[in-house]
Amino acid sequence: MTETLKLTLDDQGAGVVVIQTDGYINNQGGEEIAKAAYQLIDKGNKYLLLDLSGTKIVNSIGISILIEIIEKMLEIDGKLAFCNLTPTIEKTFHIMGLSQYAGIFGDRDSAIGELMPPGQIADQ
Image 1 (tube, rainbow, N blue to C red):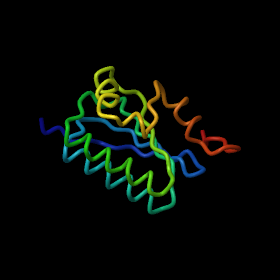
Image 2: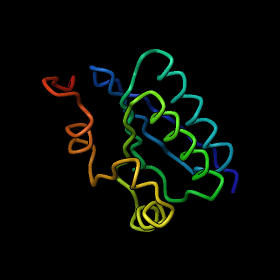
Image 3: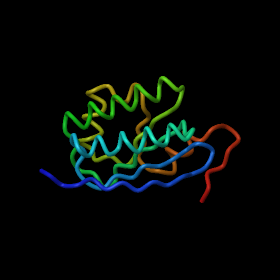
Image 4: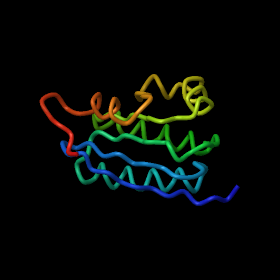
């Protein structure tokens, strides 16, 4: 599978940014996510949400790259969360332990509500 991953960034304010994926998260797709995440972190964003509504497959290399992003978020006392996962991806993330360090939510609104720093309101 060589499907190109497309990313859409949606700044919610208060350091919260949604990265929406569309496509396969493999080594190339994972690297694209990591590049975007690290650029956002460098700009001071500490709360990232990966909306996987457009992703049906994540391979093992993609998962390892997501783990690296989780580790980076832990280093900066940030938070990473995932939403809109397929049942298979959600089960895989639980088995691989990602859910111990990153929240998993059914929808974007509940995830943003959890990530948003206290006293802040998301930009609409």
